[in-house]
Amino acid sequence: MKKYAAIVLLSMLSLSICGGAAAESGKLSNTNERNMDLPAAGDFEAFKPEKDLLVTEYKFEWSKEQLYNLHRTLPHAYIPSFVLQDSEFDGLQPVGVLTSLPGVKVEKLDSNEDGVDDQLRLYVTDPSSLIPGKQYEMTTIWRYRGTDNPSIRMSSFLSHPQPSNGMINNLWGTMDSLFRFTWDQVKERQWTHPIQKQHQAADHTPMYYAKLNWTNYTAKDSGRLNAGFLHIHSPDQLEQYRAGQNKRLHELSDEDGFQRFAVTYAKPQFLTYEQLYDNYDYLVTQVYQIGKNEDGEDVTIVSFDQDHRMPIELLREKKISSFAVTEWEGIAYSSKIKELAGTAYSVDTPYQNHRPTGMFWIKNKFGKASK
Image 1: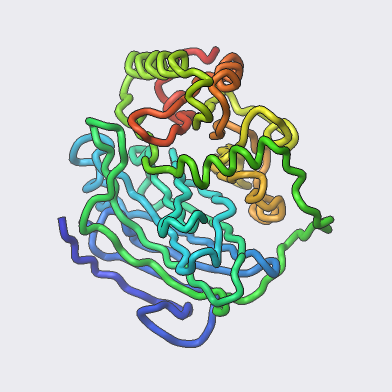
Image 2: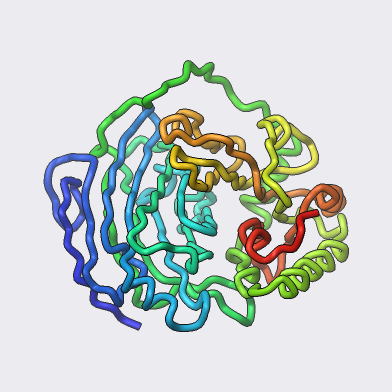
């Protein structure tokens, strides 16, 4: 499925296809309504608020015609998706994502198999809730770990959830390049509301290092995000899916070693950093929170392990309030995972080698009265 997009580039950013002087903003537009992943219009900006942090901001919208073409086939057949990729082996590492996109799911991947995650993939898993002409926002944060001049490139593409194995596959021929820039091209700009920090090393437990070693070397992800929940279209299908989750959980044994899992809460939970990260029982790898922007709209906040957390300065700058945890992913022995199930709406565990993930928006859409 090859597409030919009419893309108008009105850029002040030194993009790879344009060249030019260093700058930090740009505009993109797409006039081809059959190109359903590439937004019809968008504004981009990047800045460095700290000596080792990079922030990218992309505000964009899809047209009425694009979304009509997206939905006129099978429900949820196509998922608008984005990928951001670091050019170096370990130059820039993803810290977090903040977005107003509905039903967003995030994968943090090691694209070159060097043991360091250097790629972010974002999937709009609730495309039926997209509104034509509405401006959406996607902000990503990266930590500078190198000494060279790494670059980040961002592209859009379409994905398709497979009915047989629950995996999200990229749709061939749909990739569109949005922008590319280097670390040195981006200007410094302080946070609007800076916070005085006391820099100190994280206090890791021995269990943290044991599980981190398991993650990086023993059982590096060979599977992808488990998207089986995207085939839920009714309350009955939701209950059947949860029953399958419970069955897989009860079949796990500590003899199987560390296991990946994902917790979904019935309602957002106000959990402190200590409640999530300071423990000997599990290692947190990804956290989803829901907050409100200044217009009262939902915003999803995605952060990762305790070494890669969302800067509170960004939430203040974006005027995000009332944020609370809806889902989180981690690694633990099955006995500890089963204990977590007692306070959760659902717990997902590995299925056909796919990474477990939460299902908060699906629960809200099809769930009966919350427990």
